[in-house]
Amino acid sequence: MNKAVILAGGQGKRMKADMPKPLFKVLGEPMLEWVISACENAEISDICVIKGFMGEMIDEYLGGRYTTALQAERLGTGHAVMQAIPFLKNDESGNTLILCGDAPFIDAETIKNALEMHIKDNNAVTVITAELDAPKGYGRIIRTENGISGIVEEKDADEEQKKITEVNSGAYWFRTADLIKLLGRITNNNAQNEYYLTDTIALAIADGSNAGAFKSENAEIIRGANDRKDLLELNTYARLEVIGKHLVNGVEFICTDGVVIERDVEIGAGTQILPGTIIRSKSVIGKNCKIGPNTVVENCILGDNVNLHAVQAFSSTIEEGVAIGPYVHLRPDTVIKKGAKIGDFVELKNSTIGEKTAIAHLAYIGDSDVGKRANIGCGTVTVNYDGIEKSRCVIGDNSFIGCNTNLIAPVTLGKAVYTAAGTTVTRDVPDYALAIDRGVLNIKEGYTLRKLDKKIGQSHIAKKK
Image 1 (cartoon, helix red, strand yellow):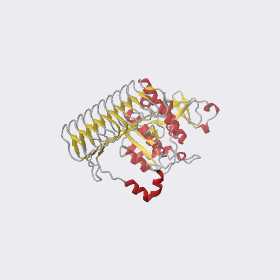
Image 2: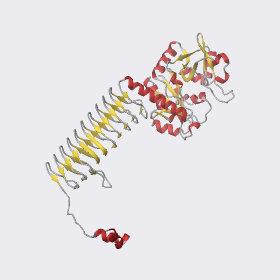
Image 3: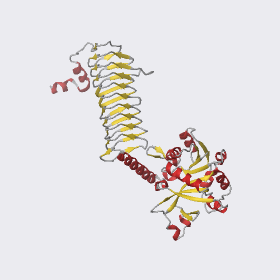
Image 4: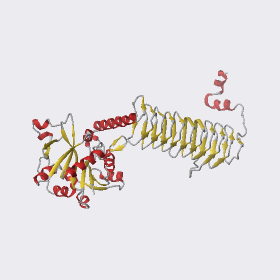
């Protein structure tokens, strides 16, 4: 079985944060997750993550999905991989991929093609490389007729070697059995007193084994982040790449300012994404929608021809032909049926809104089921929480809820029920009924004169008259 070891023990001091560097996010996902996804897409599921600084955060993030091993001291890349030896010895028959947890743009195609060459050439080790126009700072690949003779670091390279533009990505394929043996032979006899994984290449060649290099067509596999500026550049690159993919698929962007779309989002052709729009967490958006400006869509499913303007939508389902906004908050487990209209300053939570129902403005509907073609007046509130538990309200088809109606849950309104403005409904209302509760209007003459006299004096009021 083929395995992967992901090096994720870096602290990233220049990030100036108390968390492992691979957990910093690119388009909403930790860099580590990008690397794991590439492995999974390349059909590698046996993964060991090497943790170090604040390794408990790595464990918490992974949630037991994969094996982890602790590098208690940072003594080089070779030392990091040594911590995975028990994991490697579980099955020595296949090959092992070594990846950096803070280089998010490694891709499944590169992984699979490099493995194919690795096996075909019978290599003990295959370095994954890339061609860079500006290779300064990277280890150069020294090729021979039969493979490679080694990797020369920038500080050790002569002038001719510095002209080489093929560089080490930090990713490798090893025969697992060879990797275990080679790790046992590398030393820390160098200026840094560290164990370098690159030393395994010279050792393999000295043993008469083959060492090769696979040049990826994706030069972005080199990209990593050492500080916040680098992280911003990673996010900028990834953001534009995702937008480019959607442009190819027929999505319209009149301006990309403030537009952030995570990589697993699906958007149908003909949809327009306006500035200030953020779409996250595997949301699915249909065709010919208009999303934005200034809209957040997270973990939602939208049908065709949906219009969201200045909406914050989370874990909700919005069917086709729905228009929402501006200034609307959709909290989790909200379902809005076909053709409904939700206007300004409305909040919906854990509720179903029926087909062609209108909630024009200034309303809160929580834990409720609203039928078809209902009209919810401004100021309507479903009073769903009594301080101990939450209860549901039901509003029937074709109902008309007057302005400033309070529905005290649990309560059910039947079909075509009307409520008068200002009514508080505390019990069920049958079909086709009008609920009206306005009490008795009491007028107390002279009340404000007495009240104001205490505050500013009767003589002052008289003068104003």
